[in-house]
Amino acid sequence: MAQTIRINKFFTEHGICSRREADRLIESGLITINGRVAKLGDQVSSHDVIARAGRVIAWGKATLYIKYHKPVGVTTTSESHVPRNIIAEIGHPERIFPIGRLDKDSSGLILLTNDGDIVNEILRAEFGHEREYLVQVDRPFDQSFLDHLSRGVVILGNRTKPCRTMRVGRDQFRIILTEGRNRQIRRMCQALGYRVTKLHRTRIMHVTVNGLSAGSWKELTSPEREELLRAVGRPQV
Image 1 (cartoon, one colour):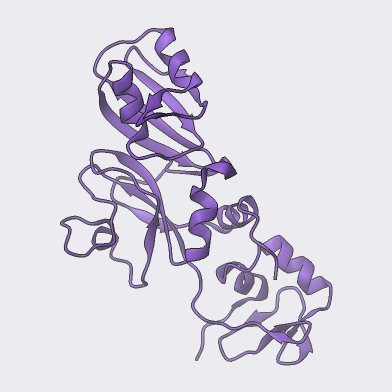
Image 2 (image 1 turned 135 degrees about the vertical axis):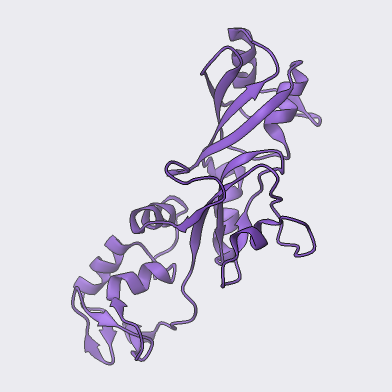
């Protein structure tokens, strides 16, 4: 017997729209299940034909959005021959891939998905999606160091975008970036005479690593999925 889910969950799991928008579509009377007008709370399975304004929406595979607390030593690659690659570490039965990178010597949050269309929408710098990190350097720093980071630092011939910083300790600070250049924080600190000894990503957009132990993963909650789709301007179907 095929597993059933609520009709609004069908829309969110297939990356079509948020649950709230799905409810609006259902209330509009445009959604049908096997030819009858759908109601809020209806249950559906893969045996049912779901359509909007007469246009059938294929079931296909549900989209997956996973958050993973990457430990130091795991490599962010889908290449199976690489020892401790992130895909083997997670061991998910579906084919998934990481959104962006987190270098081998860093730890913290990384998102993975089977939704190829959403990757650029999250990563492209012009969209300004935030990423937050906790950083420790090899010696104490003064406020001018944080101010310089905030204004931007020239690395690889180009100045980084302005960012936000805040002191946490004598040699620790938080930094919030809206771009993700290769080893950016390490290169920024190196340009100012400091060496990063620990780098931990705590947040991507609204998704945090809070409550997720190192090496563990879980699917985004419904509210996290909805906010993700809204934030990237996922078109409604």
